[in-house]
Amino acid sequence: MKKSISKKVYFFFNTDDKNVDEHLPRNYFLLLISSIFTKLGDTLSNPKTVLTWVMNYINAPVYMISFIVPIRESGSMLPQIFLASYIKTKAKRKWIYVFGSIFQFASILAIGLTAYFFEGVLAGSLIILFLIIFSLSRSLCSVSSKDVLGKTIPKDRRGKLKGYTVSVSGVLVLLAGLFMMYKSKSGASLLFYSGILVFASAMWLISAFIYSKIKEDKSKIQEHKNTWKEVIQRIKIVKKDTHFRNFIIARSLLLCSALTAPFYVLLAQENIGKESYLLGLFIIANGVASILSAPVWGKMADVSSKNVMSFATIIASALGITMFIIIEVFTDFSKIFWLYPVAFFILGIAHSGVRLGRKTYVVNMAEGNKRTDYVAVSNTIIGLILLVTGGISALASLFSVELVLLVLSIFGILGAFLSYKLPNVEAE
Image (cartoon, rainbow, N blue to C red; front, top):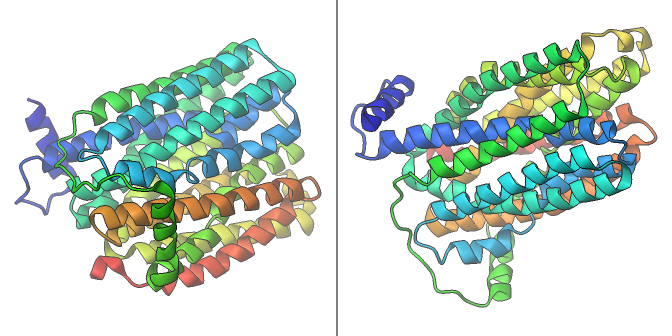
């Protein structure tokens, strides 16, 4: 029965693929379902929306709130160059993902309980501590998942799989946003917000169980060597491999779509207010954006993932520049209620394309252990850049939120150009 269901799902999404490997439909189905749960958990504990809202609700200091996005994003990337050495000693790498998911479950659960039982500086400090643990656990999943995806799903099916994953999870996110809006009518309590985080944590536990059922072939393993020597050797890849170096430079400039998101929420709070229904609207906007755009981005990424990165970043940059002009020049429009959810919707479309495009690109650049090195090195370097850029953005936002949008958008335009100039790995 399970095999029959998995085949039906696979051929529903891939009608033109009739000759498939025995385990492909099953793995496709399990990866799809597992990813849907993690993406739902990500959305319901998103630092750009939910965690920002909750920390403000429990009176955590503003400077702590400013750091949660760069900590969450960079913390999952920085250790990857070291983890790659360990991962490459394992023949089956799905178990690394499983353990990483379990630790993410425990971390978000702890954040939910902290939000309910503590407040102020203590609550903020504990949340940041658990967020660091969450991010480190996430790094285990990031490196291993791309390797498992590369081994179990053909190159011309990976982008579409990611697209459908985001789209289906977007439907669930939409329902969650509607529920939040409904609860806001009667006044959302601290118990409600904590409950959302506890529910979100369970998504990683479910995902870990599903992921453990994937049929993964053994990888070629390497003996454990001196970690620091291996790290230095991997870093040398950036110097020797021009293609890889150009990808990292382009990707670092694509961060505008991720880093600008919290500032749209801040602008809405400044100009509209802090009513709880706004959180539901932002989540709905992001969910609808995923539903509509992800399958399109996925199909485009299977043809040219570098063009997806470029086009999506142009959308994000154009939006940021437009918002800057509205706030600075047409101030009356900045008080219009629907402006911010619509802007967040457009940003959601763009960010979905940027993420899907660059993830597909790095997976398709290489095979085997070389792909593991590419993922680890690029994520570690981007983690450093993200931490620095995120800190500067948080500081600059204290002076002018809209100015941060403008600066990041200009960087995004340059990143779009460099992405477009990259080789088309899907054509190789």
